[in-house]
Length: 128
Image (cartoon, rainbow, N blue to C red; front, side, top):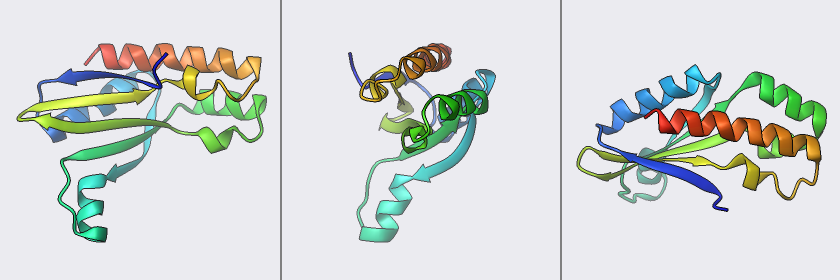
């Protein structure tokens, strides 16, 4: 089982970020942070890197259930989504597979929550 799932779409980069944000919102996820790796790498170490943005997404009800089930689970939160330019008007969207991410937690409650989150993330990525 892979630690992520992805989909390549034919859209402008910024438009793709908006689209991903919208489909995540439909599944109950909000964006807590947006990290522009292209900009950060240029500013910090003067490296030109392709357009690559990390969205940190959170679904508050799932976060709350997770924190109730496993007190240190905050280490694994939130869900990261990567949006990267792979060609002209071609963008790859990758999302963490929460089932794989939770395998080492060894808590059956977290297994169930991770499966539910995975379904929502897959529904979001499939709707792109």
